[in-house]
Structure formats: C-alpha cells, structure tokens
Length: 141
Figure (cartoon, rainbow, N blue to C red):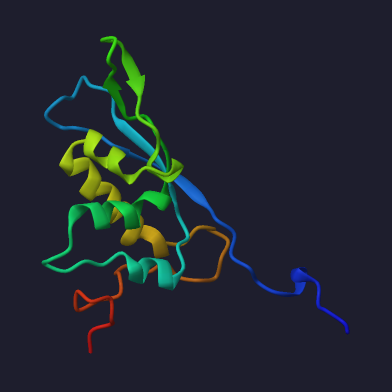
C-alpha cells in the first residue's frame, strides 16, 4: 500500500499574531498585549457563537484555546504583582481577571479578524466580514 507524503497536501499550520489594546481612560498605563491564533478554520470560527441563554463560562471556554500568551497580571496573595496564565494554558476562568472590554475586544480580534490575509504575497483577498449566523452557529439565509 502506497501513501502520499504530507507535503502533497495543504495542511493549515497554526499561525499567530500579537494584538494590543490601549485603555483610553488610562493613557499612561501599560497596554494589554496578547498573542492570538490568526488562522482559525471555518469550523473554529463557526463555533464562536452564542445565544441569549449561553453562560459566559461557555464563551470563555470556546475562546480560551486561541489566546496563546498575554501580559495580564494581578496582585498575588503576597501583595506582589504576578502574571495571569494565558487562557490557552488550560484555564478559561482566567478571563475573569481582565476587564470585560478587553475580553470582548479579544473575542472580536479572534473571530472577526481570523479570516484576514496572513501573507501579503498571497493572491487571496482578505475577508472584510464574518459569516453571519443566526446565533445557533448556522449560516443565516
């Protein structure tokens, strides 16, 4: 039995990019930075949906694998600053350590911008909109 080498198939590699969010109410503060997955598959993007009855813990769990690193911190039990582990390290509850606005900004950066062009040499045009859904993850007609 002959098998084809994997080099004969396009297999998407996980790519990431750094994003930055500046709190305009604190212009002298350090910006939040995160390294996020940049090339989600259609199926992964389509999983990032929620309805009115979806709990935030479910939304956190869906987004967590795509936030690979960040500079979020907190004050530890000893009163000293310490890093907050990245959500992709396995604990989506760490989203509770960051401002709500930062979470939703990350959600947008990951879901909406996931289909943007990664390679400027690519002939593919970047997407400008996410696939509309009806809240259940199915495409709207």
